[in-house]
Length: 140
Image (tube, rainbow, N blue to C red; front, side, top):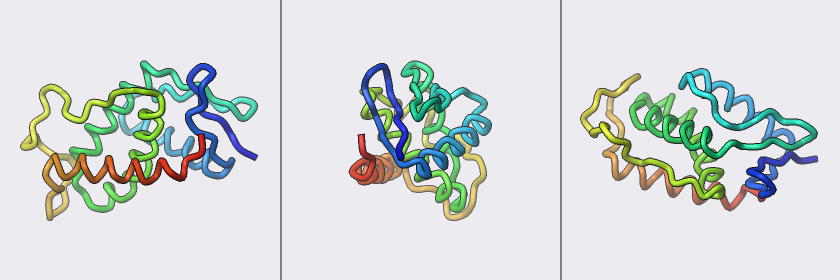
């Protein structure tokens, strides 16, 4: 069995039920953490619709949150979810905001753990590579 993540009639992802259940649980966690809806609708009859406008806002906020978190454990726990969301955004032709207005590399970081997170360019490059790699395993 599998489930479908769609925008309109286009399927972005067709994961197994177990992968989908874990992903949807993490969606709830990050919605609560960010205080924003994800745009990922409820799973009904093994299908869920994604609202691209709300999803873009969620993805952009998730990237800001991830960038500002330099605690090694939090980064490790969130990296796979962020990469998965980036694959969905790319497949939906959503242009994510890697450098939002008002964000500077020296902005205060949350949940800091020494050593600090890598420089902005290295962070974005590594996350984009992880997303591309993961996308190869995400059936559409």
